[in-house]
Length: 264
Ligand code: AMP
Image (cartoon, protein in one colour):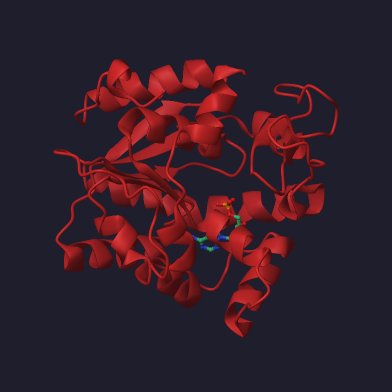
């Protein structure tokens, strides 16, 4: 199997605690680290944060905590609260979910932020208000962030990546119709399910998401720059090239385990 697929399928724990807000424990529970990495990922939709998050998690041996994944997971569950249903409808239209709700979703998952395995938070915070809420949640937990990694890419390349992205609804592997196609068109290499285009990757939703990013998320960069935590990474090139660039840049800021120490 392609090494990238291996990493995508096996590179991180099952995140049951994250999906269920701690009602179910992760299996296995991540082992404690002497210096757990605690990182947030920033960057526009389609820049490749999800792909890089999985690789960074495998290298740093930290857990991938994506708020978008929480909502997509809830979309497949039958017992959704009215608030969660409203949040899912916002996501489908490409809009941001209400601040109070998304902050509450993260707050009730604080156990994952405290986890001694460390974390890469992906998709949160997206606004200054969310960043301030996260600062407070972490301060209450007595935890400090190590870095805010921002992946950057010109707009035309972002639109191309988003409109060509396909996802497996069963095992969540991601593909791109030209840059990273499955072996058989439209079929997941991992589990054989029919691939889908995310509703918010359609052109009308992409336009909404890019506008929101510029308005809401850009001020975050200044917030983390002022805190001395911002690490900028150019996200052009292959996933491997971007990953190496991210590691080289991060090594200046945090203690990155050697590659041989990462799980197979
Ligand atoms: P993502 O997978 O991070 O692109 O998130 C998918 C969708 O989930 C977004 O377009 C939003 O509708 C919603 N979402 C995820 N995280 C947040 C957040 N921090 N604030 C508001 N909405 C969010």
